[in-house]
Every structure is written in C-alpha cells, then in structure tokens.
Image 1 (cartoon, rainbow, N blue to C red):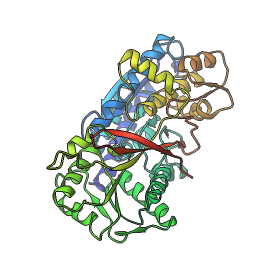
Image 2 (image 1 turned 90 degrees about the vertical axis):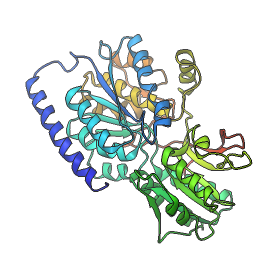
Image 3 (image 1 turned 180 degrees about the horizontal axis):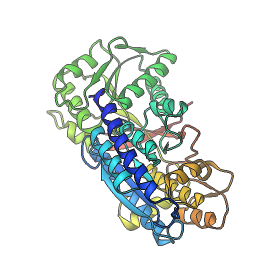
Image 4 (image 1 turned 180 degrees about the vertical axis):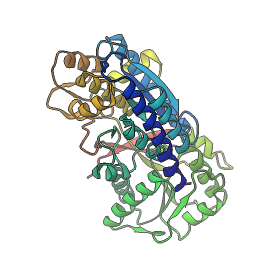
Length: 422
C-alpha cells in the first residue's frame, strides 16, 4: 500500500493541477478578493482516528463563524467546505483534489494523520493551496520542506515528532526504564516517531530491545496476535506503542489476552489520547481497565488565547475543546489572518504571509477579530494562539510543550505532568 499511494497521489494531483490551471486561465485579471475567502477542512470524522478527529473538526466552523461575525476577511464572509478524510490516504487525496479543483479553496486545515497529509500536500502544492495541519507530526515534512518540496504551501500548528520522541524518552528515563521495545503503525507517523524516540532513548543510555527487528503493523490490519507477541518478547521494561486509536486498542487487547503485557510499562503517544480508548481495550476479569497505568505524551496547549477559546467553546458548544481542537483553531486562524494580511483570497497570498502573521514583529494579538482589524488598518501583527505561540519557522514547523498523561484505575485519562523538548 505504501508504494501505491504516492503514484496514486501524483496522478490525482496532476489531474487536479490541470483543472486548476484551466480555471485560472479562464479567470485571468479578476480581483482576487471578489469572490470572498473560501477555505476547506480535511479531517478524520470516520476511520481509525475518528474519535480524535470528531473533537478537532468543530473548531474550524467555530472560527469561521467568529470571523464572519466581526466582518469577515477582505470585506466579505469566509466560506468553509468540510471534507472527511476517513483516516485514509486515498480518501484524503480525493478530498484534497475536490477541495482544490471543484471547491477552489485558497487554504485547507488538515490533515491529522501524517499519512493523509503526505497524500494531500503534493496536490495542495501543485494547485497553490495553503495546507496547515493541526496534527501531522511526522519529521518527514521537515525534511521535505528543507528540500523546497512544498514551496511554502505547507505549515503545521503542532510540533514534529523530532521533538516529541525525545520528550517521551525523557519520560521513560524518569521512570527508570532501561530496556524498551517498540511497535508502531507502518506509516510516516509511526516510523518517524520510532526513529526519533530510539535515537533519543539511546543517547540517554537506554537500550532498544528489538532495534534490529522493529515491529511495524499494517494500518489496514484487523488482527495483531503476532505483532503483540513480538513487541513484548525479550522481557523489556517498557514497550513504546505508536498507534492510531482503533488499531492500537485492538493490539493492546491482544497483548493482554496473550498474557505478554503483564508487568510491562506501556508508553503511548498523541495518536492514542482519546477518552474512548481505555473502554475499547476493555477490562480484566476482575473489572479493572486493562490499560490502567499506561503513560503517554501529547502536544499540549499553553497559548495565550487558550482561555478565550475555552470560554467561547463552552458558550457555543458546551464542555471544553477536545484534543487538538486548539491546534485546529490556530490553523484556521492563520489562514484567515494571512489572507487579510495579503489583501487577497488566494493560496499564493496566504502562503506569502503565514510566517509574517505568526511570528512577525507586529503587535501581539490573541483575538482573531482584533488581528483582522489591525491588519485592515495596515498594521503588522504577531498572532499568539490557543495551542501556543505558533511561531512558524521556514520549514512550516512550530515548537510546543507536551502533556504527560496516564490512564487511571477508573479508565479516565488525566494529565500528570508537562515536558518540554530540549
């Protein structure tokens, strides 16, 4: 599957590029603000990451509603087109093609899964659509950005796993884990995280038990007996699992049923931090949650705009913003602020102003409407987000703080610490 997707993506991207080129040629000379800003979202509301995607997705229409209530962008309302990427690279490529060639959006918030963003970003670049991910953490994007592959049409509001891997390695060291095995989903996210963790853990003096025989599972797999047995073999102190919720829950359940996970510290990452996953893994015969005591890391939110977002969320939706909702809000905010700064509703305009509004020398603003007002007056801004400062660098990356979380005996997930990558 991994070999087929790039070719499929390329062919779809080429088709989409031709469609867009034709459209651009037909509309030459028109005012780039005349039709209003149109943005898209490409997030997983079904599939392996649905339980997290459903928490993220509402942040985009909430941002659009807020912006339109204070006058919109470039004097007109913002339009949103939402697409479910199904946590699937093929569906993500098709969705991105639709957003670019049919809906003709200027920017897109998405995707969450790194494998889906990998499939979507080449289509975005060829069609000059700005893609900002609130959750794709693979270090591969940094490497490709450095080579100039994205031509500035890519950014993310979540830090890459080149930071989270070392952060989790620090957590492992604090817990006196000396021998750790790894098991990861076989895609850019899983393999990229594995590499970052292994390098950092070995630098801290740890040993990777299965370094020469890494366990990587097929994202489409439905049974995991062999993988679970292999990951927990060799009597490790801990096992790092880089999973998505649906498949990860099945794998952990299989490990328990085979009796191989007893006494081993399980460490997880952001792809598993969903309130639903402890119940999906299940309970022991005496009624305890199988994953009680599991620890993990997740990109945290400590931005200056976080309190205001929590207040707005409670007022409009009830409850609190879920996992990655602050990063999603910030991704959408950067799209609209950059369009206003560029004074045009195009992907080219947005891409040219993302870093300026995110990490510029202007007035610090946490309120998107205040930022739009200052930009309309011709002033510079430095947006301080809900997830963090979102200081986007030349590779489209940001640095953030990480929450350390655990599963309690009651099956509830709670944050117990914070760790900042060194």
